[in-house]
Each structure stands twice: as C-alpha cells, then as structure tokens.
Length: 280
Image 1: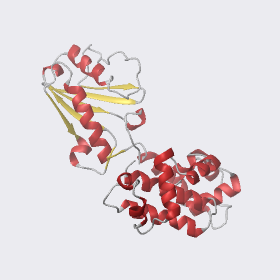
Image 2: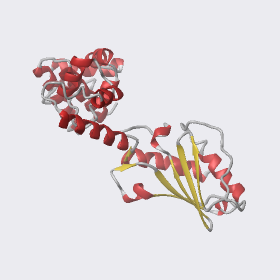
Image 3: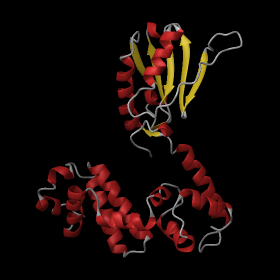
Image 4: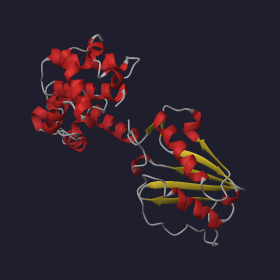
C-alpha cells in the first residue's frame, strides 16, 4: 500500500470519527497523520520495520504507529473497520458530494439513519432535509444539485488511471491482425485532469474490410477485466451498407467506429463497465 492510499484511509477514518461524534483531538490526530504521510518523500512501507524513524515524523505518535503496523499486518485499521460496520461503506460515498461534510452527514444520520446517496436524495426530494437544524430549502436545493453533479462526473477516470488503462488497451489492440498503429486521442491526449471515455485511433489494413473491423471489435471486447456480453447484430443503413459512424452498445460499453480509409476511431472503456481501476 503506497502513501497516497494510506493517507486516504486515515482521512476517511477522521471523517467517520467526526460523523460518530468522537473527540476532536482524536479526529485531528488522524488528519495530521494523513497530511504528514502525504508529504513524506519515502514510502511508509519502507519504514514500517523501523518504528523509531516513523515516530520521528511530526504527526505520528505511538498510537498512530500502532495503527500503521496493524494496517500492514492485517490490511485494515480497527477504528475504520468498526465505523464502516456501524455506518456501512455507502457513507464514504456521501463524503464525496459537495456540501455533504461530516457534520451534515451526522445530522442526517442522527435524524433518519440514512447513510447512502439514494436515501439522502429521497429525503431532499421529500423536503425532509430542510427540517434539520441549520438547514433550509435553499440548502436542500443545493444538495440536490450537488448530487446531480456528482453523478455526472462520478463515472470519469483520473488522468493517471486513464493513461495506465490506455497503455494496456494499446498493447491489447496491437495484437489484432492487420493493425499497425494505435494512438490515444481525445481528452487523454489533451491532458485533461479527468477522462470520461478513452478515445483510441487505430490504423492499419484491419480497418478496411467489414469482417476485419468486426474482428477488431470482438478482440477489444476480450480486453481483460471487461464484462462480457453477447454481440448484437451490426447496424445497417436502409441500403444495406454499414453506417460510416456506427454505435454499438454492449452492457453500457460504448464503441464507436468511424471509417477514414485505413483508420478506425474507437471510443471505448466507459467507466461504469468495470474496465477501470479507480473512481474519483
């Protein structure tokens, strides 16, 4: 486990402790440790067998050291695991919605024992959020908008995750007969912070004939980790020819192919298909 993942786990624990109404000093100790580990130039995994060096880091005391040792021994932190059992893992998703901080989530839990996004949205639509202390109609409407925005962007990749996946896709597609070059395009090529789809430009003789294009698509669908599904029949124009831009949907996985001589433009890897390693 790298420092980024450890810090994320400690931040989550701090938020869950705050939701649970725990002592503010304890909450702050987890956040301080998370910030210290984020800034650490050396990986905690390299220091875990040298506790004295870890204790030299400001923000890591004996109690936090014990948590880190438990994490590397058992794969979890006791406080984090216990709080997830109490509030359920869905509580962590609420923390990703703008305007839903630990204090607001604690209010909602205390009044309604709701700890999932769908439940909070339902409460807001029923006008029950405005009934809570320090809430109101304006806050309720903002919350509904924030949930809508969160859902709109939740299926996007972080850039580093998209780059890693694109490399794997390029290697996979190059194994197809008749494919000479595979190049990432779109948001990934432009270096955007997040990527919704992976746009791939594929060049070679394998893009010319309908049969070879179908072979390419079928090979793409065998990409490791992708949900498998039955291929639908190819789409056709009324005249019987395949359209220049055909869209094929398989279990929510969108594939576009546009014919330009010996080029196929493929837009693949929708995030909701389980083709990705990490969400925002």
